[in-house]
Image (cartoon, rainbow, N blue to C red; front, side, top):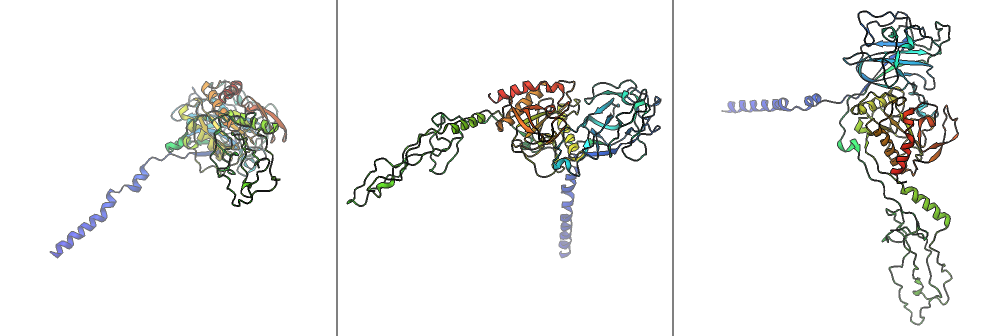
Length: 571
């Protein structure tokens, strides 16, 4: 019997030890759960192109892979790369070592869609004007680099790129003739831009070579460290529902202006004790002079009856912020200890009307505060999947926001509204990882469907200093519309969203969207450092820098944006 019990106990213990291993799915189950990819960057050096270094296995759209057309030799100064098989990416850009170096050349890329065909050659536009200020640590740091504007190309797994310096004359059928599309990718390949324009990577070392072109022209030197950046935005992580979007809110209540008598209409009496001012929703102090709740104590010496002074002793009654209630005299406590003579410490009553200059100042502030607009719905950084681990910690703030600069991202218009978060994550990674900035450059971004996204971190209501308008990032904010609007009109929804956003944000800082103001230039190609520049409160990027941004078709809309924003503020 004892042997039987011992055997049974042993079997039971063995089963108990083995049971958790069989049914507990913990770590294995967690690893099997889908996890959003964080994104990645591939950096490919652009090397001098050799005469026989063209990759003839890649054909242009409509070409024949088995019978490539003959191609002229590229100029010796050209740089490029052919990478027909790379990890998937969706955004491209070219960067170089020094942010102060100018790229005096033409940059073109073409990509192959995953499972699809090659795109036409497209040009990458300059990006030196949308950057941190020249003297800021963000641009002078060791991580900072120069670069072109990024271009959204969609899911791709093959790329070719070439850089041709200024002064190089292209041969027949090659070089610049192959580019038939701008940054927004509209249009096909130009004449001679087929397989004959394919770029290949040589084996020569990197450097800023200067070479003679066939026509004898001197080629410009290219900056050192040229490389092609391929950005994969990764998958959008699912944020907590309460953190994805900031809901739209109504405007702040209007602050009534002081009246000529010093009282604000509609003010209510206060129950606060004297000496402890409390600011109510109307912006008027609840502190006021009023009769004391304690009556005067009767005299305790009947032989000396109380003697009333010829006039009552009155406290000075300057109401804080011109209280809503008229000042009333406070009974003197001299009745407790009668005086044989009138009180020499009595103060004449102060008139209730404040000085004219003070009243004018208070009225100006109240009128400015009265103009506010509702907060529009804003997709937070968590909502579009910003990886907070790649940016620098901390934030940099200005004192106020005086100007809203409007930009276009020149990333092209070939994106859907559902892809907008992926475009933002790609630009964010390009700004931080490729260009070496501390964070996303713009304060806000708007897509073609009119959805507003939080940009640089630090708080949507605060004066966060961005990296969007070289020389004017202090005391301003940057609003970028996703797309390229040099030859394409922005959507009506995007234009309306600009008006809603600027009306709300500028209203927080008491700015009139139809007004003008002044900013001090930090240095640029249009205004020298220290210049006091007059600007529209809602301005285009080109107003502060000699640039084409925000595109002529978007720039034309800024007049209607100012008018709509002012109306939303109640002006």
